[in-house]
Image 1 (spheres, rainbow, N blue to C red):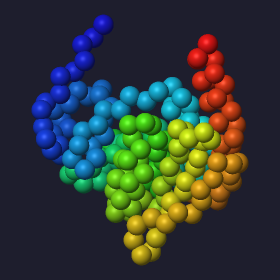
Image 2: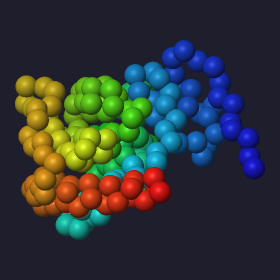
Image 3: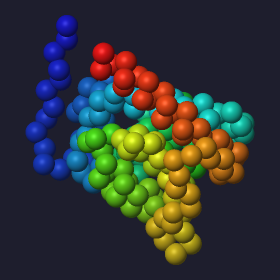
Length: 192
């Protein structure tokens, strides 16, 4: 058994401070706050379904990745649950945000405010063309697509809890009802 790492005390973190962290520690830097996520298997189930759906028709010029850091500025190095990047960046971390076509966050109980508000501003200000928010905490899993507006910020494009096929960034089908059914089956079995 290994001991948990002892992290340096800081009120405000910057990318310059990240070198003090253990190399294998997954982290996010959001508005100067260090966040060390610990996703559940159900959270990762949804992330995997998103990756599979995106990879089905992914053009050769792009690469779909889970849990990949994006370099934005001194106070922000988010780690989207799923991200689509240019293939040239597939062996780099963090990836420059300008090479991210799409960022996807799957909400967890401790990330709701970050995913629905803070990251919306961060990704929009950084110029990420599309941002998907998937909420598995509701009775039915929901999908929201936000697209970068020429006026600045994001505008909602799609919000649904049904079977959805969209053409951005390419043809992608998300079977939210099937994901909801599987989540419910797992939760019911876990209660026994």
